[in-house]
Image (cartoon, rainbow, N blue to C red):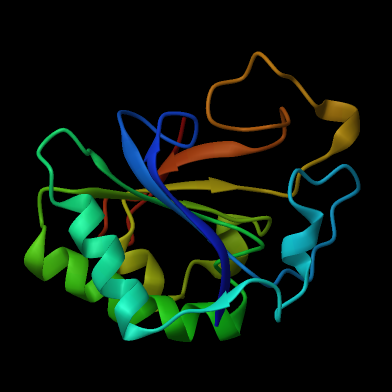
Length: 158
């Protein structure tokens, strides 16, 4: 998996102060996408064990609430394979940190993914330019939902 970037202090992509990982690769290609360069699976840098260690280190301070994973799309199969070990490691080494995951897929379509067992909140649905609303917290268009999945695969829409 490649990634487009890591923001070590982010307040725009989930509650509290967060570390945000922007993965590369997305098949949704939403018109008006905020990061169209991340559609390309080869964009950015290779995600390695060193990258994983960098993220874990950035998550350690007590004032960091958790990790947000955006893209591209983390739920592309190629990205899920690379993210699952990272999410498992975070649950073991930093269980107090929460994980937010942004995807253009609807939760109903990805509900069987093992990734969801390590995620606390999913922001789902494609970005729809006609439903864009800059006043929304943590999402770009009104069709997108913020769903608590509790890291156990249980979920409810908010």
